[in-house]
Image: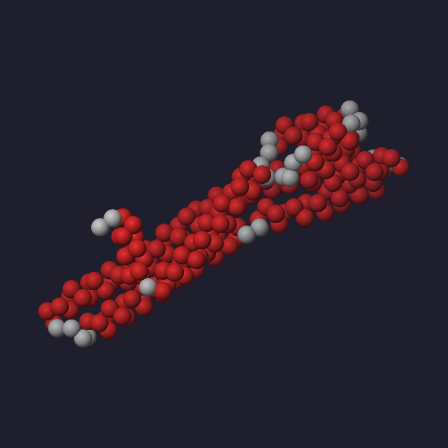
Length: 219
């Protein structure tokens, strides 16, 4: 018997709940790939090098160049920095940008952009925790149903065959638990890794947005 045939037999013996877990696994894998692409690649930049370039442009009074630098990336930090620089640039054209009320406006622009970007970082990640729990519970529920069917089958066979029938029924019933755990474990691991990566992005946003505001005050 080939591996594919064994997998097919394993899946069929698990019953209805195997299909439910399979659907959950498809959703889980989709979220994992999408989130790792976004958080791990699209949102991740060399924050210190990026901010050094921004500060250099601002110090040289090249605000438009700094804004253009931010526009090249779709990561949250450049978008937030761009919002602060645009407000700073607008104020510089009409009044003193270093006035306390104007600094407050820059702070508000940065805070508003931050609130808009935070959901992008954490979006759909929490679903991985839910999918892991649902997969485990459906696996256990499928096992319980299989055990019930196994014990019902035992009651209709000869005493000499009861042990064999019961062992086979329990073995098939455990398929759903095994499949549920096979889906839940990667989801939980990915959930933890993504949370750690998201926390790093949030730390960079908090750190460099504050540095931006303090830097603009000095200019």
